Amino acid sequence: MAYSWCQLSVNVSPDWNTDWTEAFDYASLGRSADYIVLMGYDEHWSGSPNPGSVSSIPWLEHGLDTLLKKVPASKVILALPLYNQDWTVNNKTGAVSSEDVSLSEQNARIQKFGAGLNWKEDLGQYKASYQANGVTHQLWLEETRSLSQKYKMASERGIAGFAYWHIGGDFPGIWPSLRNMAKYMAQ
Figure 1 (tube, rainbow, N blue to C red):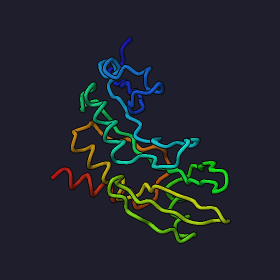
Figure 2 (cartoon, rainbow, N blue to C red; figure 1 turned 60 degrees about the horizontal axis):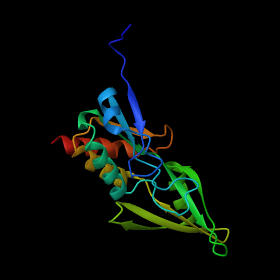
Figure 3 (cartoon, helix red, strand yellow; figure 1 turned 90 degrees about the vertical axis):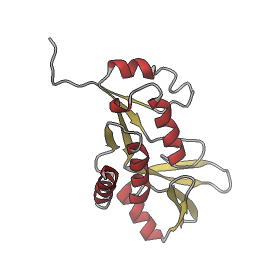
Figure 4 (cartoon, rainbow, N blue to C red; figure 1 turned 45 degrees about the vertical axis):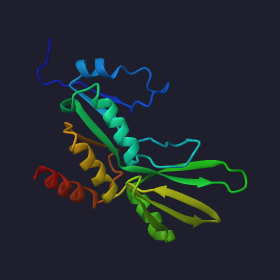
């Protein structure tokens, strides 16, 4: 029995020719599914050997453009991050660790510890660092400017829409900023 109201979406990671994405046949999935949701996050993940952005513009753009070579834009939904990693590097051992934080928590830590912000044009986001208990922390921020740039880049490719991971990870300023970018892109 077929249900006309059912839609099939499949979440996939960006294809970087690694064993992690080797299992995905993006073209076949695109033919079979109503939507392909590109997980536009985890460029650097919890447990990553090196600190870095959760979703830089060049990484995201490459992943999206690679998917669009195999799946029509009308079937692609881009999922953007509403979370971040707060990175630490042990100065003595070089050990790297990170903690998942919501964007509200990211902002609270920046304010609490007086983190200096530095816009990284090549990444399309701010990098921040702060000291806490003698340890240096680093964040590559997801905030209104970075998420709006990601929205703009993907909208210019005519994709079907956007999703955000994860519910509750946002902060109030995100949604007006994204609505303004949507209005701008619609002109």
